[in-house]
Image (cartoon, rainbow, N blue to C red; front, side):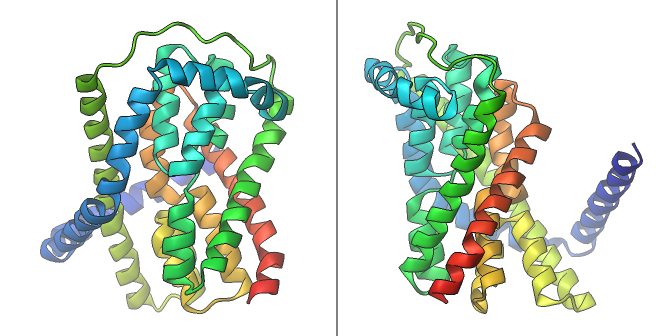
Length: 308
């Protein structure tokens, strides 16, 4: 109880500090919000909106049911999830955040996912994609695509290792028959996809400004580089990876693996906006992502010794 009580005080202090900074320096932080919106509009919107729209359509097609039935035995045996959950994991692995979380919401709402298995499905359906890790982090930040492939291996190892662990607490098998469902209309798919991607953009813009605040605080109080890297990465994974890549080291590489697997608060907020509608407990989901991030970091540290 004392820990929860103190956490509320810390959160209250952080919120009040942010409000004060916004009031004292509105132009400075409004610029940060605009930069976050620009980042979303240029880099996230073009890649995310089509995936959200197409996956909304796909989950209502007969092909989805056929695919789910085909992979159902493997999904049940490995992860104790249904074929529909296995499809969500596959879509997430191919496209990255936040498509997987949105797919889980759609499947739960359509009756494809029993409530008991939704956390297990969410655990393996909230991943980043190869394009981000290999292209943006590996080639862009570390200057070597190999770093991105190693991070991708560590990321999926952490995600699926914990996914396998969760199967041992499953009370039911994941082979339930898929219910019949009418195809989603194009207008409904477009409307829901646009609203979803706007939610993502809002989270990016707000947390981009929070990241600027942390950088300002770091400069004011002369925070050690490692402390700033950890704080920025826990807030927003891209900024954390960029800072860790400035001076590559085994510890920094492990932190990058943790950041992209945990996701940071920015990604968590995006995902929980969908997952809470699927009645997935936020606390349990965050605990799972922390564990997945820790496993990814443990795998990344020794691997980095072979690469650096």
